[in-house]
Amino acid sequence: MENLTSSILEAIQNPQPTDSILECFEHDAAKLGVLLRDDPAAALGLADARLRVFPFKDVKECWRRLYTDASLVLAVRLIRENITTKREIHLESLRKEPCKNQNGGNGHGRDDAPHAPWLDSAVRYLDMALIMAGAPLREDMIDALFSALKKWTHSQKETSYETEPQCFDAEETPPPKRRKLSAPLFPPDSAPVPRRLAHPIPRVSAPSFDAMENHIQDVRTPLVITDAVDYWPAISERPWSSRNYWFEQTLDGRRLVPVEIGRSYTDEGWGQRIMPFAEFVNGFIWRSQGENETGTRNSNNEASSDIIDGSHQAQTGYMAQHDLLAQIPALRNDITVPDFCYIDPPGPEPGTPVYEKRKQKRDTLQTETGDSERGGTGVLQDAGSKLKNLSTKGNHHHPDRDTEIGIPSEPIINTWIGPSWTISPLHHDPYHNILVQVVGSKYVRLYSPHTPASQIHPRGMEVVDSDSQHSGDVKSEKDVKQNHHQLKEPKQGQLIDMSNTSKVDLAAIELSPAESEVWDSMWPGFSEAEYVETVLKEGECLYIPVGWWHYVRGLKAGISVSFWWG
Image 1: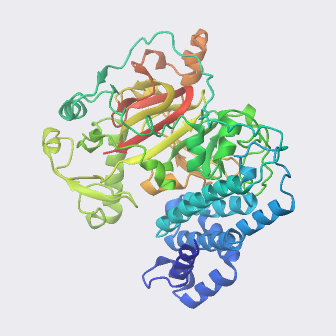
Image 2: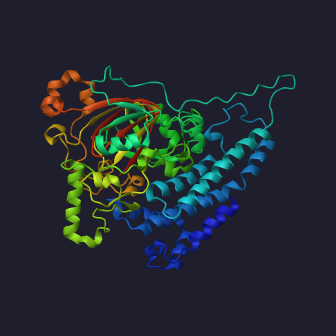
Image 3: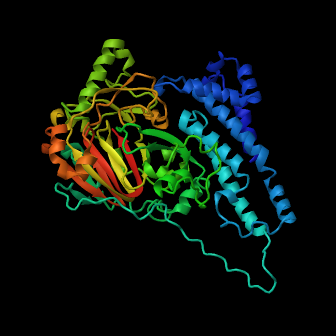
């Protein structure tokens, strides 16, 4: 740990000449170094103020770099101040009061971990750098620190078990060792399941690559794929249904995650908060307000400062569309990208909303800046995404596409964790998607991108002010990197494009069919729109073609992973 923290501080104090962080101080490396060394908290505050810009893509990278390095300095100092003396303090306390609190806890909770307040604070600094700033140039450093902290906390638990005295009378029989059981991460409750699927999506077991290529390029409709991810460690030897496994990977639940608060992002009062994973699991998955995994109330105000006020029980919490596997790379080893995500997919079909939006962007860009700023590929390139040019048979078979297109070299992977009753309102995405249900189940309904606007009722430009807790156009087109930064609030009166989301409250229609006359008057024509549907179960995948409108409702608490590409 000493070598790791020293190397991190040395790298921070000696930035490369081309490092964008120098732009924050007009390339005055000495001034930057003094601030980070003498007052990293002030540096963090300065960067934080500059990050609060909407849209986030307008934030200069230098401020993201400063936020990251200041956070690293503060975290490293906490680690160095506390970690080297922990063992001595713990052993000394045992020598003085060997049996104090011996029977007062369950031996494996957060409060049993050494110096929990400082460790919570260190984790917070590191995770906020990842979530708020994307940690440019420092992701490997932060991952190395988390790995070291994970090993250290594990060693402390082992040391504590080996060194603590056994406090029972000589005539007593020592208590038997308790067998470690793997508690479930999710409760067994579920939301109502549709009695009968009127328009079921076709299902296919373990299709070949060629069969899927034909379906994606020529058939272009949703498809449920079974028996394709059973080999994932997340489903087998490292099950994501295990509470113990998740708490091991999240430093006993200390790691922070962004959580959407509210029924749907279209509802009034919907917002997002960053909170410890344990707080999310207990407060929103199990709905036991304000308790950590040991059943004791969380007293760390700093770690909980971004948690929404009031009772968790009255609200839905959903960790939605978050790049969790980049934040915690160890979890990335539990899954693999489906081979089908490397199929060259067709572009959006002419006349559909995604096609028209892309065409409008191309035309606008050509008018304003000319071809020189179009990357030479004939398509608008997303900032922050790595693009490569492809020219395969798919391009020749579909005249609606350019002969050369730019698509992300790797799929965009997002993780979704939530209780039953989570809702993603009817919307469409600008990518092809393979949605994998790892744990739990969901009901999904889809509408063709050719569904007339008079039936689907898309939203338009909407004003969001800073008093609301909306984070912006969370589900609309945005560059790849913005998945890290969903907590930025728009300025008062900021217009956002919500045209990829329908006005129709499909959850209300689905769960209250007796009110059909009311729904028809609110959204005329919608009841006549054709759709397909499925119940997606554990280990099943759903292929969603680009631009298809889809509505998702959680039936059983669980975890999904989505792969966007094309």
